[in-house]
Amino acid sequence: STLTVILVITNAQVYYKKLLSSFVRLLLGIVARVRAQSDQQLRLVACESLKLLEHEYPDYTFVVPKHILSHCESETTFALQGYLCLLAATTSKLVRKVERSRALAGPGEIEEVEETSNHHSNEIRQATLMLLDKLEVLSPAGVVGIP
Image (cartoon, rainbow, N blue to C red; front, side, top):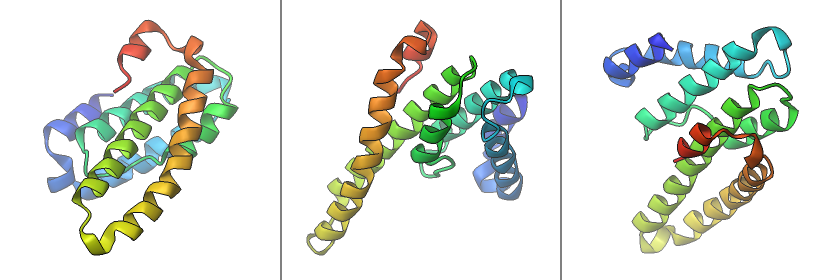
C-alpha cells in the first residue's frame, strides 16, 4: 500500500514509531479476518504490506509465523496466496535470526541459544510443510517473491 511505502521511505522505525506500530496493528487486524468474502483484496494487500515491512526492517518482528500458519490453514479464498507469501517471508526471517544467534553465541550462551533454536525449529518445520503442501496455490510471481 502507499502508506507502507511512505513509512519505509521515511525511516518510520526511527522517526514515526507510534504511527508504524498503529499501522502494523491495523494490518494484523485485517489479516486476522480470515475467510471474510467481502474483503479478500484488502487482506491480500495487508499481507503484502506486512511482508514488505518484515523485509525492510530486519531487526523488527511484526508477524510471528505460527499466527500466519493458523491463518493459512483457515483461509479458503484467493487471499491465501498473500498469506503464504507472508508465511514464507516471516519463516525465512526467523531462520536467519536463529542462524545469526547461533553464530554470535558466546561459550556461556550456547545452551540458551540451542533451547531457543529447538523451540523455533518446530515452528519452522510446520511452516515449511504448509508451504510445500500449498505450493500449487502460489503463482509464479508468488514463488519468485519468496526470500
